[in-house]
Length: 138
Length: 138
Length: 138
Image (tube, rainbow over all chains, first blue to last red; front, side, top):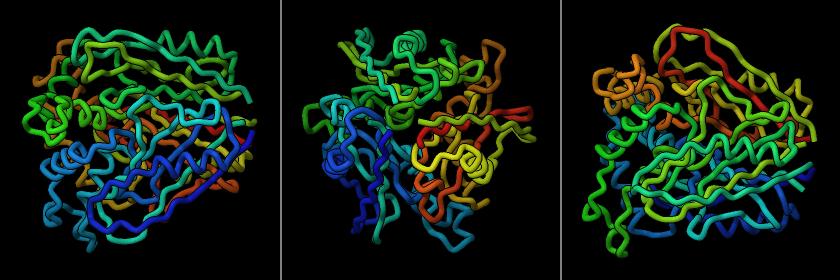
């Protein structure tokens, strides 16, 4: 069995931001030399989500609007605010969107349907953030 | 390390539909010959969810009603509609229900609690759909 | 390839309760002798979630309140109630929070960012409950 780890670093400019990381995951997979296995992609932060969906900016706006309507940012609504933190909404949004994704690796490629793309979704950004890629297989 | 891949194909008759795929995953596991490992089950579509829950039709109606109340289908509510697509709600519902599940394989079986069943949940159906099963282990 | 399985058992006192199981997962990992691989942590119940987030009690109250507001417990609201079950809300809450988490194992440790902790989230407790840990790797 082989295993391969890669951390992606990037700066998120906005508080809420979705970044397409598909090509970076494909690059890591190529470097791993693994042909058959599983690839875990997970955020190293608890106000963020790695999710798979469409690379369509209108849909991304729909996600952000839905989350904002159902989980308002207003810190005074949340007990987490008593710790001095103002990002309780981001912790809730990340649970709704999901933490991590696992992708099948077949014949050296991400085994995807035609529209699947991997995104890092940040809900409390404006600083450096990290994503972990871990691939195991042969 | 062994790996095994199987695609399930089926036609979804309705726009929103849940299909029990537990037996098909068990059959794939048997064919794989893998006794200890992990089994990823994921939809190859971005308006669908593979999830684990109860095989109880009333509960499935409760899921559908809750999702419909909180994420209305009405395409005019969504920016994704500007692309000509009318399924933004389905992309949001799939994130809430989750994309994929990973199941432990122990002694050649899906290592499940007594009520766990695997479902393909489609939110924009009425055509052919695919599920990917990838099993790695020994 | 090595594999290791461990079941955690515990009693949940309240109907809705979050239990930090990070140390128990770390202990299982140490016992497994696995240095590089993947660790799946999943509930064996369908009214529960294993999730990764912050060990902050105020935030946990925020999760519980948000879920209660958006998915009321009131059994008469749900068709699942017709089976004699009164926990439809718990099945819905578990889907929103997610079923399972997969954690990368690197150099014998859970490969985590600084704030990641693993919780068992129960939404229909007051009895014995089980969590499955499955680790594969080398």
